[in-house]
Length: 330
Image (cartoon, rainbow, N blue to C red; front, side, top):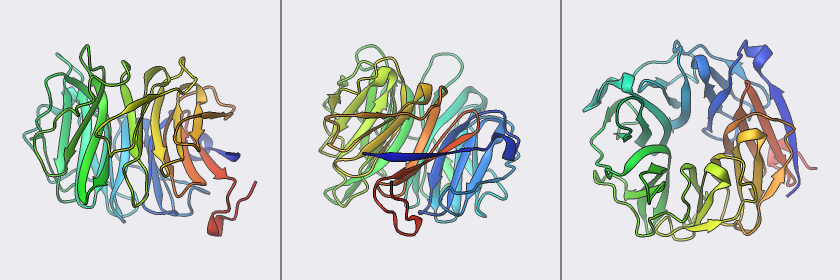
């Protein structure tokens, strides 16, 4: 899987000294990246160029997602949720967050949407560590924390969706107590009681930080990644998971992007970028030339992707196959 990496250092352009933590695209053109110090960057040309957008938030954005084609939802420290309906030009808080403890004691690490239904996941920052899940049914206007989690769940780091037998499901990963450290939780969208799949204890003893399912009509194939190069794989929509070997035990993997049932990419610490084209039987390392954390990634098809990290860096991944109007072939 030959790739070409184009590095765009946004530190000088945007006046940012800290890293970017999350990235999302509504389509192959319109995207957003968020990070420390309330950083927001937007693109309308598939990541070729980026524009700084002041958010008014001074803390750390951890993740971002599109709830609708024109609605961005960013989450972060102190329970922060901010919404933009004008491509990042202005940001505002949701109208209602009900049944929510003191937000200063929580941080939200991941957010995802399936149509108007969305979930934000995180953990406590004070006292006994407990996982947190917020849900919305109106594209982020109102949120509730009514989801019932197992008491063993101490942190939820990422959330995604898939459809099994015409039924949409939400899948989140994170960290549990001893015996189920690599936590995977799956439920039908709309249910208020999340249960642990039968496979747990997890096939890995390491916390999991990222999860994604293939963007194909068959959404049964997915991957989750985590600490010490942990990778687990499912072929039945998340009902069961099996461990895969990444070959990088000294590197933490933070996020994964599943392209189809064969291809996936993952990023992590020490500038790590790995990919598979054989359903995870083999994972290939790609040299980014970077020694710092790569935090998140988003792909438009198999050959055009955007990776963000720190300090204030965006990597555009241009694959071997021509991508329509982008026309990049290596």
